[in-house]
Image (cartoon, rainbow, N blue to C red; front, side, top):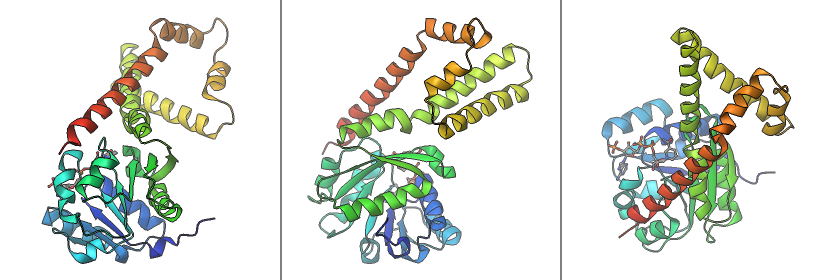
Length: 278
Ligand SMILES: NC(=O)c1ccc[n+]([C@@H]2O[C@H](COP(=O)([O-])OP(=O)(O)OC[C@H]3O[C@@H](n4cnc5c(N)ncnc54)[C@H](OP(=O)(O)O)[C@@H]3O)[C@@H](O)[C@H]2O)c1
């Protein structure tokens, strides 16, 4: 049972782009109060659009009313984060800072904030834009249970959430679910291309490919059986699916995915090293 009343939480967004828009849209549907939300974005045009669309306060510079919040969400690109948070150093007191910037570690953010360590790292993915996101969360030791609960309440407004116990696992979240939609899109592209090669027109091939992924994901999400059991159930011995799966196994399908995820994870660590300097 939640001890947080969403309508009371004061939230400020640094950066008013795609993710901020998705989060604000989802949060308003979950009872958060637009009157208690503020956004700072460099572009005056973006600010005007956010105010008009959501009724939130938006400005191009960081004022005291922006800092006076419960949750401060860092939603700028990783390469802009250091410069973006510089005006906050030495001005924070009790806020929980939530960074959704890929790669950058909480210790680097804390240093840039002048030693402020009440930080949560969140890694959402793009289906958050339609309320079907997956977000991995990591909290530094300085964040208390109430802080965690508020953060979870915000991120769960755009999909499902999962906490990880070690910060290094956020790179793994990035590699599995953060970048994951692109792997699925790539699979859809491959299935669509194979359909066209079989003689379908482009529209039919795409319809079959997307419908199949959507239907299979919904079936897996709603089933008590594991994906492996569901796969076995549609694979009759000596049948068509068995022929396809044998071909996938011969090509090292499981290993291909494993290596792709490992490559994304390694790149996440590298980016953290590169962008976290200074
Ligand atoms: N999109 C995703 O799927 C996704 C998934 C997981 C995590 N993330 C993370 O979410 C963060 C935001 O991504 P996004 O797609 O929302 O990016 P975005 O659309 O580019 O939004 C970032 C916004 O921040 C503004 N900005 C840049 N510097 C600023 C500053 N110093 N102060 C205030 N605002 C500033 C940008 O303005 P300009 O355009 O004028 O620079 C832009 O409007 C990134 O760190 C990304 O790693 C994104």
